[in-house]
Each structure stands twice: as C-alpha cells, then as structure tokens.
Image (cartoon, rainbow, N blue to C red; front, side, top):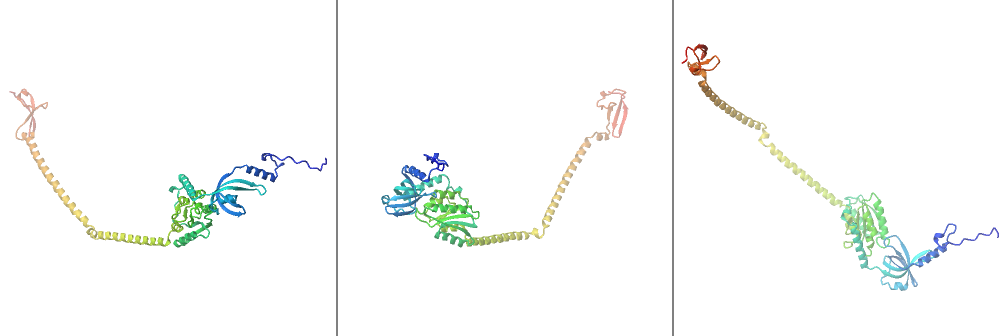
Length: 416
C-alpha cells in the first residue's frame, strides 16, 4: 500500500453523546437527526399573537409571537385550515393554535404546521384578565401601602406615549400651560400590538434608572379592550410595581380600566387629568400665595391693633398716671393697722397690769410679813420648828422669836 494513500475515515458516531473533536458529525447529519427527532413530536396546542402574515396559493405563512416574552416562531397553514377560521387573522390577533412542529433541514428552520387555529374571544380574554387581577391582588401588588407619593413640583417628568399620539400633546400642552418651566423626557413607543409590552417596559426601565426623573407618566388615548391588552400584561404590571419612581397611569378614558391603572401609584382618568395631577397650576399657586399673604398681613395688623388697645387701656388707668398711689393707699392702710395693733396691745397690757396689782395686794394681805407688821411674832425652836401650842416647848428651853423688825432669842419661863 502506498504511503501517500490516506487513512480510512472513522465510522460516524450513532449518538450525539459519542461525537468527538476527531470524529464530529457533518452538519447535514445533525440537521437530519434534528428533523427526525422533531418529526416524532406530537401536535401541541400553543398560544400567541399573530405578528404578520403572507398568503400564497394554497398556503399562508404567519409569524406567531409570545404574548409576554420577546420570542417568535414561524407558522404555516393550508387554505382549508384558514377556511375554518371565522375571524380575520390580522396582526395583533390573539390565537390558540393546534400545530405540529416541523424542522426544515436544509435551512435549519423550525416552524409550526397549523392543524387548527382558534382566535381567543373577548369573553375569554376578559376572564383571563379577571383571573390575573385576582392573582396580583392576592400578592398585594394593588395595595395602597405600596403606592409612592407623587412629588409636588417635579423637576423632570418621564413620558411614555405613542408615536405622534394626541395623548402626548394632551400631557405636554396642559402641563406646560400650568407650569411653563417643567421639562419632559419623552419616549415614543408602540402602545398597542405585539411590540407594545417590550417597548413600554424598556422605556420604563430606562426612565426609572435615571435619577433626574421624578415621576413617570404612561399614557395612550383609549381604545378597545384588545388595543389596551398590553397594559394588562403581567410582565408590564410587575415592572411598574417594582419601579422606584412614582408612576402615573393615563390609559384611555374614564371607562377604560387596564390592570396598569390598579398597580400605578396614581390613576389619571385621562391624559389631561394626568397633566393636571403631576404639576401644580402656577397661576393658581401664585393666587393662593397672594391670598395667604393678604390673610397673614390682615392677621398681623389685627393682632397689633388688639395689643395696642390693651396697651392704651393699661396706660389710661390711674395707677399708670400716678404709680405711687397704690403705695400711698397701702401705706395708709398699714398705718391704720399699726395704730389698731398698738391700741389693742396697750389695752391688753393695762388690763394685765391691773390684774397683777390686784393679785399683788391679795398676796401681800395674805403674806406673813403683813401679820408680823401688826404686832404678831413667830416662835421657832432652835431646830427651826414653829411653835403652835405650849405643849411643844419645855420650861427653860431657848426659842427664837421672829417679829416685823427682826428676830431675837427668848427663854421659856414656864409652859402651861
């Protein structure tokens, strides 16, 4: 065998798990195996929105997009399948499709071959929205405690609206009429159709991340229930609930009520109402300030007049004309009280002195000294015992006699 002959190629692996860098699958084999694998899949019911469609002889081609995520897939349908659909399949139509997945190996395209197409009716859409509303309400996304207060005077406002929409003019014109200095960061996006949720969500995220934005307004000019479906989308509702910047919902008119109205921090009935709510009326505020200043001036002047009247009344009193008049009155009263006190004390002293003199006379009358002065004498023994009867002494005993003029010794001559 010639050395220039190449070595035989290894046998291709049966399974993807057995492939290696030295023994890979050709691309055609991978595509073929993917087509075989997908061909074994059973038909599946899938839900989405029609984005666009093209009709050819006997066959129609559609793009089916997910209602919540930025994801789409090609779909084909034969004429007999479309003939059974009573509602026109226009872009934005919400449908449920019974389809068989198919993989076209040459181009590597995955598509759905529709066996049956059912447009989702309005009643079913409303029922789904009501169920979603109940779920989100149970999670507390609509609670008043979660809502952020709107700033009194925002320096910059984020506005999410449709392209060249009248709702945008309603907000801008009315807001600037009320407060000309207000500034806006306007994001014009799709406000209906399959692209609305993604574009509104991205604009909301960008404005919410901007620290200069004080409040965000999401608005559009009303529409049918189908037109307003993007503003009841669960992903968008949750994005608004998670926003750190206050969000104002101004979707449609008073009768329109998408779920965005329930989760927003403030629900405006119309775009014009949103403009009136997010900025104050500078003319009205200035008038209020003027009224407040006039009221304040009137209140201050009234208070000054009342205090001046009180001051004049105080100055007109006699005590203010002659301040010592009160001292003189008190001095006269004090002198009268002193004289009365002295008179009372003197009277009491005289009465007490008379009583003392009378008691002194009584004491003197009863005093032994008075008796002695009348010629009587007190006889005592040497031991100091007063002799009252003759039997208490003996003949010849020496005694002491006390008289008024003094005392002297005596001797008992006899005792009988």
